[in-house]
Image 1 (spheres, helix red, strand yellow):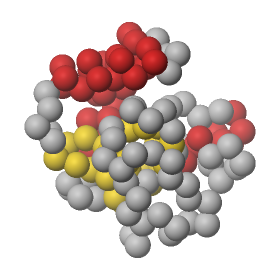
Image 2 (tube, one colour):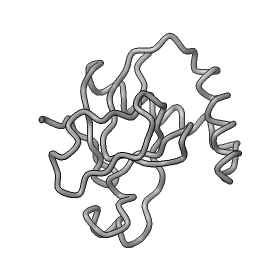
Image 3 (spheres, one colour):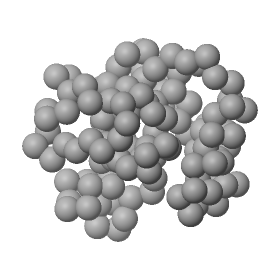
Image 4 (cartoon, helix red, strand yellow):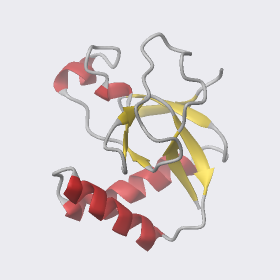
Length: 124
């Protein structure tokens, strides 16, 4: 199945890129703050970022990766991450399904970026 993972690929394409995640870690999409919802290029950066499941850090680039995990395994990993980060673990299935839906639109190996609720392939 295809999922979204953190990557350093294409970092620097935008002047406001950042990457504090561990390359290859599963990422998820958090709801942006009000400021970034109005302007994803705002100072916070959450409207253009992906959150790392293991590091609890963020990046502006994610890669679509083909993995041999089951949906249930991803949900278990997400439950642990959400609980560790202070988020409700009951969100896990919804977060995983959103990740799978976004990843399904792109071929494996594609680096994507986020602009609030829009996701697009990024070119170097």
